[in-house]
Image (tube, rainbow, N blue to C red; front, side):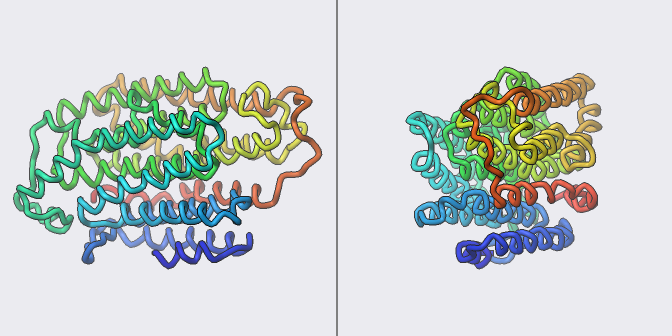
Length: 438
């Protein structure tokens, strides 16, 4: 795995990127076909869930390199991106709970460096401060509970905990502090304020990695920790699921009020990740499958949306949606990708996003009919803000300051096409039936 990351640093030509990306996608299918069995080999874990997250990480890091060729001469940029990739792979592969926690927190440092060093506005310092205070502050209760678990079990290895002998069951009032670190990382509505600030100030690479991978680390952590601490459905779960779904609904409403394209995509991420949180917290096989499918689908679709926002910004020199209008007249190919990814983001068939949203509906109906109604409203308003986004940017007369007569670069089209291919994995949706149990 590390050799693949090193290989990514060496390759330079676009054809090499595409070849490597194709190899990664094919490898992901073969690795995911192993099954859901849990294998622990020394310090590292091998399961379909961890393998899928590692493949998602590698694929998106490749796409970051393809989408930002102007940064090839900056070696510090490469060091930052690849150190973040290493920390992410370690977080998904460590079998030790302490190792996972250290890698989980270490991912913040390269992310903060990306925002502060390659961000666009002076407010990037405030955005970095918000991100660090929210994520680090919420992680402290988890660290205390890890220490308590080690004191009780004398081990933090997942293999020991998987034996089920004396697995620690905590009081229900510790349920929320246990998941707080991951609910902030997802993020859940109410503790999400750091995310729009970070996205607005981050460079393209920072937004792609943050939306595509780092948010999924929160979902993976919830599954990992619930297995270690033997959590179960409780009254606190009902409250968190209700809060998550209502928060997702409010986030979709917020999208309709946004005028900054990156802020709109950031709030749409809050809405989609609320489905992930609800699916994991409901502790059912269908809920878990819905969460995993949504994580993979959102990883590629949200990254592509930020790519489109950046490419449109290069032509219009603004992120203000009303001022970006008229792209259809000047760049019809770019408008085509806007249409396709807005459809994907609103979960149109036959995309992977649709499978993720459909899978959670039976679980919500089993808990409460009102939650299913909220889910229906989320789907409706999700379609609304995606249609608003597409029509506002692409229709109408273009402003005089929009650059015209310059065709999009080939690497931009390659990046967007590579984002789209994995979203057709619904044609092989039996891959995700493996996630019924850990």
